[in-house]
Image 1 (cartoon, helix red, strand yellow):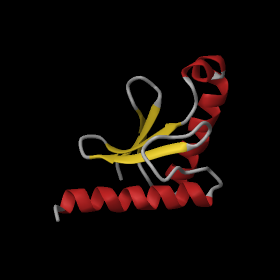
Image 2 (cartoon, helix red, strand yellow):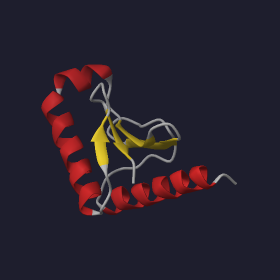
Image 3 (tube, rainbow, N blue to C red):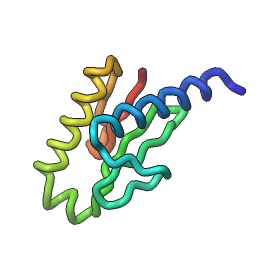
Length: 96
């Protein structure tokens, strides 16, 4: 097994556990359901977190999306992770 892949998968597992323990709905698959979190490891970027909301909701409820992302970022940084927002502002990336 590739060490980098293993470390990424371990980080994904830890992120899933931390967010679930904080009360977020963490979806078991890559695709997030409405209101849940899609979490997956992208070897090129890190652990990706996407909040499941329709495109219409993402525009209509931009303030809520910002609050959700702030809450996610707070939980993860308090746990010692490095978190950044992706270029389009729709996903958070956890790198360590």
